Image (tube, rainbow, N blue to C red):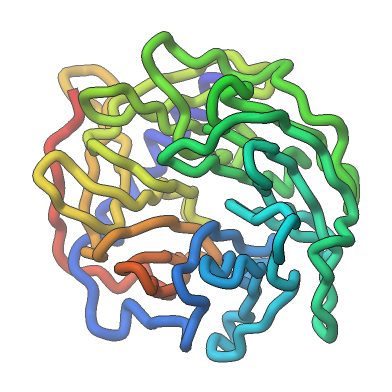
Length: 324
């Protein structure tokens, strides 16, 4: 299991030479008049469609990267009494999964979408109770690993389990459970989750003080590696498609906000992460990879923007210090 994490170290160190730094003007392209106050972010398995939540109307919207100006509702607005979507993920068969909240009640709901119709939010394909808890300042995080067939939710508010997972079986989910999930270190809480290309779970772990940590875990929940990210606040992370680079959005201790590449390196004969700021964005919220030439980033003030970023277009490096 540990060899897969070491492969990330070797791959990132080599590829870091090829893609780093400030972007040309064409490297960042807003995806049309996107949803206001976008939150949550997911990309379909084929990398062709972006899915976000309209924070004002509480609807789930999508846009194809080939037609980035044609945003459309795929799940209608959540009206009074209907659970509100907080974060989203994409399952096979044009199914959207959403962690939802109605008051203190949390659920995982799935919807089978079609290009020509808007699904009513009162008619989910599945609805799985998660439990009751008051909302926290940080939203939970959801990721789907299409190759390995699992879904993981991290960062649900206490007293709910910090990490739960389910098997993806076609267009349906198996039972959610914290069995075989990572054990979170004392004093930390998970705030973001993604999966490595080989199927390991990767968590952002946050304490009251200090930089966030990045933890790698195998399919049984066993910790493979835990490193300081060198960044104070990571909001989201994802591995690049094809190149295996680890990308994140967030802020460092110097107040620099934006898109970061987390380079694996050796520092004092020990594995470490060197964060490299490759693009500045105001209030970055989430990042998801669509292809080697397309990262999707949500960012901006109250209204927010959804942008397509070409990570190969950066020319200069803006590295941070290697994390201790």
